[in-house]
Structures are given as C-alpha cells and as structure tokens.
Length: 228
Image (cartoon, rainbow, N blue to C red):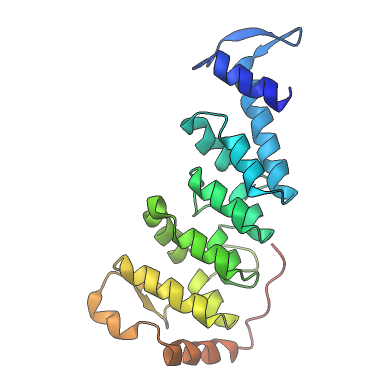
C-alpha cells in the first residue's frame, strides 16, 4: 500500500479497529495495513537519514495518537529515535521528539538510551540539547539520565558517567544542571542520583568534572565500547 493510500485509509475510516474493507482488490484490515505501511516508511526515512521536513510531512498526515505511535517505532530492537541519534540527525530527532517519541527508549535488548549514545562515545552536543529540551518528557529524561544498561558497550553506567569518561565536559555540566533542575543530585562515586538538596555542593563545576574525568580515565578496565 502506498503512503497516499495509507493516509487516505486512515482518513476515510476513523477508529476502524477490527473492521474490514476492500483495498486494492483484496480484503484486509484497513487501519492495520495503513499503520504498518506508515511505520515502515518512518523507519526507512530515519535509517536513510532523510530530512526532518519529510518526516514532519509524513507524521503530519495522521492524528495525534497514531503520530505518537509512529514516533515510537522500533526496528531490530532499536527505537527510531535511537537510529536518528546514531545518524547524527538533529532535525529528525527534533521531529520525533515533537511527535511524542519516548526519550528513554533506545536499544530494547540492552537498555541503552538515546542519551547514552549522544552524551557518550557517539557524542553530539546538539542532540543532547534537543533531548533535554523535550519539556513534555522531563520525567522520562530523568529515567534516561539515571539508567544503567544491563549489557552492551555502554553498560553499567549512566549517560553522565560516559560523558565524563570521554571528556565531554560541557555535556557533563549540561546533564548535571538538568538533573539539579529536576531536584536530583549526582553522586559521582556511586554514579547515581539522589533527591537530596544538601548534596548540591557536589554539583559539577569545570574543576570537579575534570577531576572525575581524570579518575575515570585512570581505570584500566574501562575500554572504548563497541559500536551499538
């Protein structure tokens, strides 16, 4: 089914769960076919690193509920937002975040989030800024910032840890400032956060972050993670 046909199907038959109609000479569930086609096109558009304008045009042709579902599509255990971050595509990231992509979901098989990717070894300061600017998803951002993947190259640590590990000091300060704005304070020795204003003295400054980076880099067991 073409994209035009898919959008037309959605427009002509609202709330069509379970209904069947003729389409292209074959009987199928119209809404399911339309949504599957759109999901595939969103994934392909992001994988091909096309323009954000194209993605917005595609997502703009459906209602808000479906738009959010498409923005949270998954391909081979990777969210479309994760793929956009991997491709260093800030315009696509912005379009997906605006459409309701879950900023805490990246690699489903590892638990690696988009923030882990963009704050760490595949550093992209602009994308980190876009993710942290997702005002409607602040609680999910803190979930992402506190998470420690169980497996994979960025396992066992938070995005802030990996930002410091790779020497991205400006990003580390940005992540720390964001967490403090939400009432969470970073405990460097534990690589964890707690809601405790009296720990504000541990907030990241250039000297503090530099010191933590030097300490982390001195640990021989930390090696450059593999590609996600």
